[in-house]
Length: 437
Image (cartoon, rainbow, N blue to C red; front, side):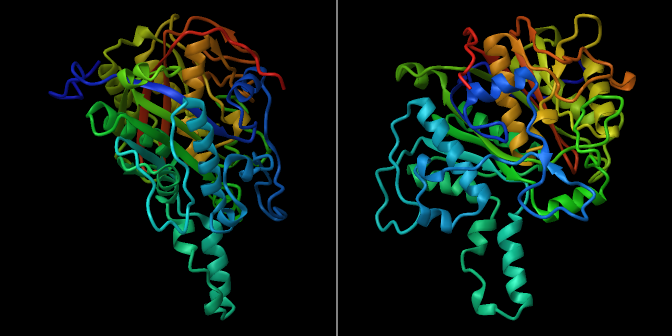
């Protein structure tokens, strides 16, 4: 390992951070056990785009959500009218996570409150979106171009603000702790988890609802990924495969409840596992180009290990960023080989070949999958991977899941602009019980 990255900072007296609630909204469903089971089985959500007419686009496949039922999760039709689609996803995922955690929280309307409910001053939110929401802005611009100035919705700003999801979840549950909304492109979900982790470790909060939500299934994102040559023209996402040709865009949300360990045990919460440490480092190279040497990712992994007080040998599974782009996969594989050499390297797999790239939600979805892999000692395969590229040589999980002890897992994320993250998790062991599909 290179120079010490945390300086004088010490976690010796810091609080442990438990994971006590899981919330998912994904193209493979919104039941956590069912989604994990579908990933283990190799199920894929990739299909031709239905949300808009993709005729004429170079990319015409995506992973779209099955129909949402917001009312089942406490979101009224009146509230939906004022919300963007991504905000609805975040609120549904938050309700999943809160119910799963067993936290006793109030619910208040998202609009029209004249007096706040009794609040929770030690509970906060850290939820990010990678870009301003496209659809409300596009609708407003269309009305402006048509000369319909008075028809521009006054709700456009609130619908499109990247911090909107964090604010709405805070409002829903009366949470007066820290309200954070970090942004780092595809590393956004991971970055918000680290911000929540710090808030708990530093004693600024006892509980944080954290993660990301996003959708790339719209005309603008599809056009951009068509033009920047990172999207798959074959309609398949094959991370680390010799025939890979790019990523598939998707949509979803993943939020988890992070909680001070003592606080969780005192209230008798079920603990899924522990977030143990993280690393965040920049490539400092380019807004789009990934360095083949992957300096930021290597430093992130080193920092995460140092933060968690572990060695490379302690990590038995790595959930890779795995975008299935030519350059990124080679760089990520090289970084992993640098720090985890030898025949006893950890197993590696990624989930974008099945779920698509959920943008800001990808880091938090993959955190959740890494945690479950450690909890159940079951590692999902890399969807779409059939013939590993020799340049991406790793201990890949191909075709079927691997049952192996996973004392600690690591999840990696990388965002355009050079942000890299590595998060270490440890699952509280429990047998795997498949959900009834």
